[in-house]
Amino acid sequence: MKPIWIVDDDESIRWVLEKALARENLATKSFSNARDAMAALEFDTPQVLVSDIRMPGASGLELLQTVKSRHPGLPVIIITAFSDLDSAVAAFQGGAFEYLAKPFDIDKAVELIRRALDESLRETSVESGPSETPEILGQAPAMQEVFRAIGRLSQSNVTVLITGESGSGKELVARALHKHSPRSAQPFIALNTAAIPKDLLESELFGHERGAFTGAQTTRRGRFEQAENGTLFLDEIGDMPFDLQTRLLRVLSDGHFYRVGGHQPMKANVRVITATHQNLEQRVRDGLFREDLYHRLNVIRLRLPSLRERREDIPILVRHFLVQSARQLGVEAKRMSDATMQFLSGLELPGNVRQLENLCNWITVMAPGQTVEIKDLPLELTQEQGEGVPASSLAVAPIAQEAATALPAAAPQGGQVFDAAAPANGAPPGWIGLLELQAAGMLGAGQQEVMAVLGRQFESALIKTALKHTHGRKNDAAVRLGIGRNTITRKISELGIDGAKED
Image 1: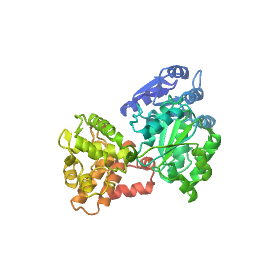
Image 2: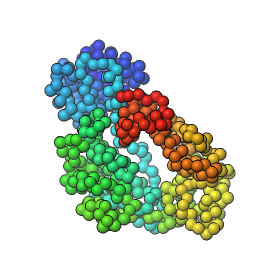
Image 3: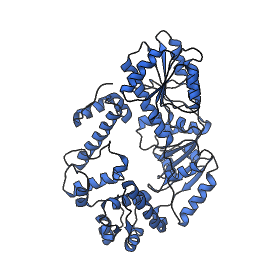
């Protein structure tokens, strides 16, 4: 994490903030004037910038303007006098995160800087994205057509609609289109519109102004602003609420939008790529999707084949996923016998490439030997095939008894299963696959009310992680999780969670 920059001509204020932030184990870098900070911005950037508004030479507002022109997502906190209301207003108009009025309470100042730090880290994680675009593998004729289409479309700025079944790799194609485009040096921002609650999706897309709604303590940039000059990928566009479709149409039509609660139009220079597994034409006929938006999105349609249409690629994908999974766990990669590979190539796998990847993760964790035979595969797979039924319900992994013993504590009475603080490179791959394993183990053991038990564990893990992220601030955690303050208070009580405090 980068240091927090403090810019103030008053040495005592710099000293107090440095000491207070040092107690929070936060690194700082101080400047006595705005000019030195501007010069340093040529070579480096802070995580958060705290600046006085009135200093000899260049003012804090000039510094704010310089920062926002180069790094629009960098939170800037302006220090101002109580009487200097005009300056505070100017600071907000210039894009300041918040202001500190002198004399300020040091604990409140640290809390504000913490909030700005959380926002900055969110921006960093969103905009940096994966350092490497995952490779799209495939030698089947259907995939070669996809590769040719990517080559033709990558140099264009045209809107692309990617269709295909769930798990077929639509986001990989969107990333490839971005990677090979003139926008490749700019951000690639992906958003699954079906995964965001309806009442938060508008703010997630377009951002919000401070005070726009309960919990909007600061101004926040939306995905369109984060993707400026780059690419915005909207997955599961068919699930977008009807009223939001109108706002999206407006952006696609004239390139302008408003933040939630805002009155200043924002200009978006973004290439939009969308994807869906649904039949949009049918949703238009059903009145669930705007016809004019459909035509805006359906400029170029790129259809991804299902895994059933490219079975010859299954061996290539299996070997790739086994190597990838073994690398994540730090073990030797498993190998498939010829009979096992032939067996896998004949499966239906309705979850497509994603399901195959999860299956390879399961094999890396669960298969006993280095060479995997058919008998080592999940029992549901081999039983269904033996009965002549397509393996259409496999979601990786059932083997009830093996799952119950292989997972770290089945915890049927509500114990924590997934440690949110555990290092990612040491955790078993695919948490959804592990959840399915645990559910299978509990069901196989005759456990009752499995949904309620796992639901409590899931909610408890989310709330505990959010509280840890917000240093115990309950209301802030509720905002981050997208739930109400009353809801998180009730859940904390019901689940017996400790460590929460009022904001």
